[in-house]
Image (tube, rainbow, N blue to C red):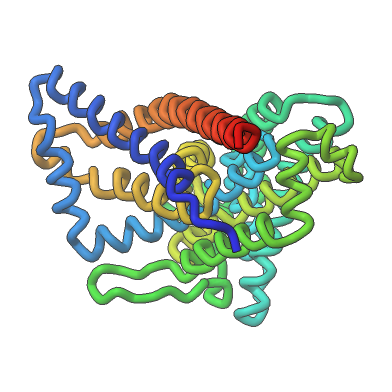
Length: 370
């Protein structure tokens, strides 16, 4: 059994805690510089989060963010930067909605079909970047950014009424058509507070799967080893290129599921108003949560809290963009604070090794003297 390392736990928590504290402090400075109360917005958001309907919104939003962050984290653990989660998520949601609206199977089969299509679409779109990297050496950062733009254009073309889209009578919106009730995922009703999407619980459960696969399977070990050093992994018999492609496929498949909470629990169709930017928020959450499923869970709740609880700010004379500023500052603070914590941890480890070597040398001298 591993010995509990209190110092290691403290260092692990120091990064996100320091980042959050710095983000709050800098946001307060911005408020103060603009002549506003630097503390009232936080109390207003906390007060707003006390309402059940807002809590439901936060939980539902956190489920979506959680899956997007898991998709990013899979790439991070392989030392891959999958910036294309947003494109993979939106394209997967649209294709799944198209298939779901045109096929009507028995409930569980309908839902299973929609989820499978979403995963395959997301994996296919991410796989393009994986193939380009393993065969041509193209950076996944460049390719996934370009694929985001291509996905946006492809969705805009597919959703046209002349192609596969549907324009509801009397509306300027374009949709993929409504998914029949057999494809609706049942949720948990919270009285007058609304409904927690059923797929939100599936999203959080996937965090357990992520942890188990990554830490308790040979595949997870190979993935982490390849991310740490491709040459060392290759020397131990791991096919680095295969692992890169596999990681991108898994990342894309998880990204494809990110839109299922909203699609199967709320809108039941893909339209021009479907949420965007989820993948980029997932990057923030994965960084803040340090790619750990528990850390990602609390980070997703925090960002969802900032999104939903800030809606009340404009009613009290504060711009709701304060939450957006804070999220941006969190990203900057995360990078800086983690680097500071890493350097401190490295110096602490070096000092510990030095103390142990000095103690061993002192013991040898005492033995020789005796």
